[in-house]
Image (cartoon, rainbow, N blue to C red; front, side):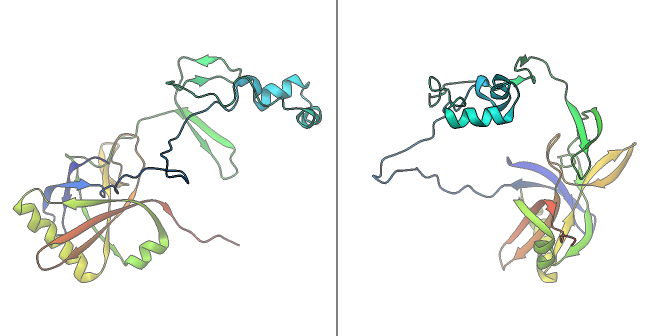
Amino acid sequence: MALRTIKIADEKKRDADIQIEPPKRKASFNWTNQRNQPVHSERLIKATEEHTYAALLKKFDGDDNKLALGLVDGDPEVPFDMAGRRIGPSDRVWIREDGSVLYCARTLMVRTDASGEEVERTDFIDVEATVGDETILPWTGRTFSRDEIVHKFAIIRKVRLRHVNGLTFDFLYEIAKTLHEEDKVVLMRGIAEVDGKKRPAPLIFQTNGSPYQGFLEGRVDENGFLLVLHLSNLELKKVQS
């Protein structure tokens, strides 16, 4: 996630432009073998379309038993003239069930039930971002303990809130101080427009991006603050016996 500017509000309904940034990346490293020689990844050909399960089954008259015996007697699934060859620059293409190249595709949204059965198929509609430089993220006032969040949600990403000038430093410092003294994290929500009305919504940082629940944690010391927005798209629930 690139450095960007967003708007947030505090508990007094004051808002300010601030920046968010991802954690710093760790120093790069190199892979070596047991002899301390550099190694690298290569893309190799594993099989061709003539060696897929469907293609092999067709060769054996659609009989799984015949196919199984054929695999025991020989190696029809291995293209010895192609397997292991390096793959150079290539493009990904979509293909139909018959193996022909698909040059134009229609994007659909498919919904399934708990058993995996398809229940609905509709045209895909773009989901707009709920976080942006023109949208103010409100102060929800819903606070949780750190232990509660850790045991209820899987935190998969985090971003840091940073000031852009002296005024926003004071603004963010006060938010961090409030959370630090209460020893709580506060739920952060985005704003989405539904039927012409603005309503709270999950945090979506770009069009068709993943929706997240956000939990803002704050810490302070004498001269500084730390505000971290923890992001989760998975709620942990007990398995029903």
